[in-house]
Length: 112
Image (cartoon, rainbow, N blue to C red; front, side, top):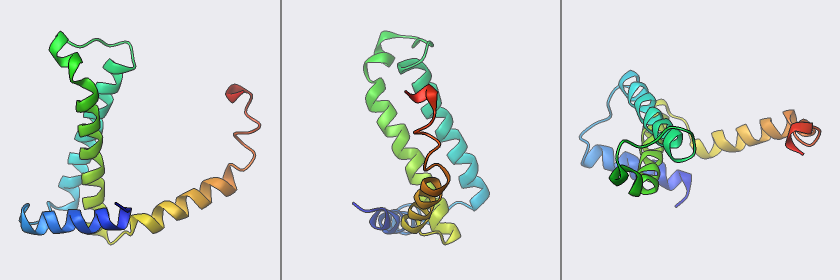
């Protein structure tokens, strides 16, 4: 699925199953909440924090994938609501990073 297709699929889901988009401020708060859930799992899977129970740890990778998908879903909602084509935005962002960081990372001694 392309990013453009994902934007159309999410819009269709929102307008048929979700009834309507939450307003932009609500979706921004939801996005922040979802990113926090990704951070919580990252701290436990890859960081030094532990899970409360063994059962929570068993499904953690599936949970992480689901939480990342939640972040993507809400980000797509916000893009749709604000008229942003994420394909174009990502291409422009990569071009900006390429021009800005052309030699920066190659010359970073910390990355060698």
